[in-house]
Length: 290
Image 1 (cartoon, rainbow, N blue to C red):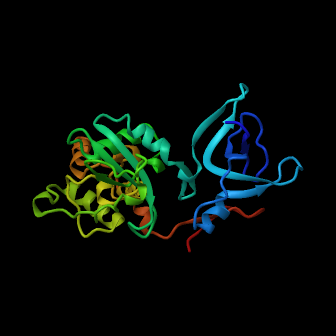
Image 2 (tube, rainbow, N blue to C red):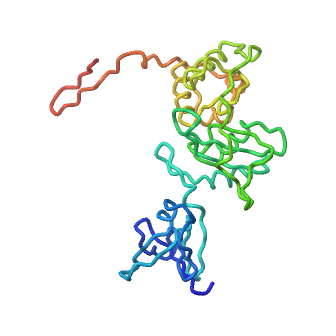
Image 3 (cartoon, one colour):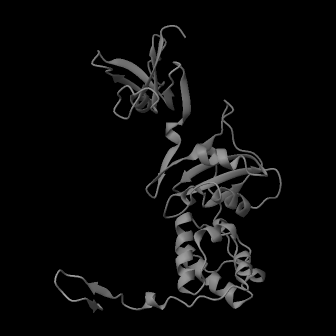
């Protein structure tokens, strides 16, 4: 477009180095004055920026992450406003959606970070499925391709995702997930192993009881709680890792996989006061019990 300029700026509003990712700004004669009757958005996105010690220019922050290629073209890398932070990790929601769309049985999907589901923010996946595939299968698919902290903790099935008049997903219209279900009487633990696993799951997730066929993430567990469950089970003499919990997301599946494996002695050290070794300079090694 004539009389239009594009700039890739870093977090300090300086021109980014060629090839480096930054915020895409647009300027020129066709730039609007602002958002109608929205002074807050106007102040946020229409900014006066001085580039290379030149007089300030009025630029519009597009909200796109981009970089300038050696060819002079701009490569769009995603939306800046779709990057979230969860338990210290920066997560690109579009990256989760891109991988999830490749899962068998997924027609469309959207992922949000929600703060209205429980005491802690959680990732929620909204899936339009082509068949009756369960959320546990989608969670296992992601667990094999993404870090654990990027696997959504809650899943919502839908016939279609809500759209804006422009045909984009209306993320503000996506409903919160229903409260985690509890187990009916016919899905209670049947064996001592299932009973022990169920007790740990219920304790960590915070439910009165869980069903042996309920997927772990559908019960409201997040990836951090998966690690806590693995640690609690090890203290109970059931040695399973977080990855194994992801691949066997129900109590019935996990217990079946444990059949025939030798039992691990429970970790009784967790119930005793920890011993501290005294390694002070020049001192003989002593064991101190608080």
